[in-house]
Length: 293
Ligand code: SIN
Image (cartoon, rainbow, N blue to C red):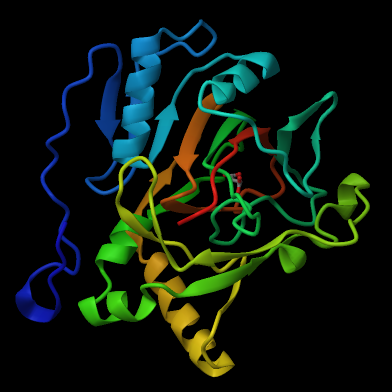
């Protein structure tokens, strides 16, 4: 990847796609930069090793992948997540009865809010934030309720060399307090005494691809450590705006029984609540991750 500026061409130039072909799945890219629809897979059936490896590769190459027309049980949803690692428990959100790892995603005419309405990387306030999230939407509004995904590799690549050098080695505080306190009261969930808070590098290296990604988000990142407050605010606002540039995004239009699987280590996302008073609902299984480096 390389970046050109000003009148010299596009702000961001993506390298030609030279990925190896897939044998057991189809992969149809939504944009050259992020997102692909995966076909030829029935997730209600046991996944062979080769198919699993190819899905894993499709995720690494496309950052977020989508599956259509899947009819899976709660157990099959959990099992699919477990193929990728230990499951993560959300520090605040409601879960399906008997399944603490199955987060409820739901908004209807009586909801005071919908999940994920602002740009974020899931639970980046955890010491070990989730590797990935697998959202299965069963009920869709007639229109709306899309989810936007943005590549944080592309956001990093679009930084000037000087800004990359400035950010190198800096860390930032991510805090769940504002995002979670009182947020799930409408589900009858009492607040905890405290919510997770962690310090992470502003630029992280992806443990699988080895690529560098911007790792600050408007939802959880509060301040850059070791610089004056006004400097931290200015830099964070610049980085958040850059991260939310439509150039780095794809937008997924849900249909009932679709699944989105995104990699929180290099992706931010935002859900659109433009469908009130209609209902949109499903479950999310979240795969645990490592401490960002
Ligand atoms: C989330 O997991 O942040 C919610 C995403 C969505 O509902 O599309």
